[in-house]
Length: 224
Image (cartoon, rainbow, N blue to C red):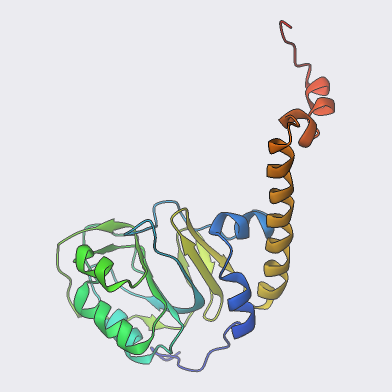
């Protein structure tokens, strides 16, 4: 198998756009509590959000040669997502590569290793999610693979699947499921808006969430 695969099937642009407004937790719940990447992976700034087709990278720890190649080959709107052994003590990505990503129109970068130059990356506005912030440098020695299936944050991510991320975390949606998950996410948000309005109108949590029968079955007692 070649080290670099450039021709991949991406989720439809319309489906990516339909998923983009929803939070990672909403999407995770809407697709049956599936697809959540490890909570160790977080944005370097709480206001950062990303949503786009995965451009996957498999890399050796402390080595960013494949990440640099991914930036070269990725298309505008892609999210570069790199599995590098969940190694936190390396800063594989910084402001120089961040500028290269912006010049290419890349939608964001996700890695299970460390990043650095975070203040400048925040000023650039490029969404970056990582396992750590680390100043230690990397090498360019070991070839890996671009656009094969990877495992990152406990999830399998295929090239072209949708990666959605915000302050709460990251979730992956299979590219063929993207339209349906967007529909289910909209339904979930509508239902939650109804719950909020019910609470504002004075209804109780037990009433709104239909908890009375459940609590009776479990034998809940109170001193009322």
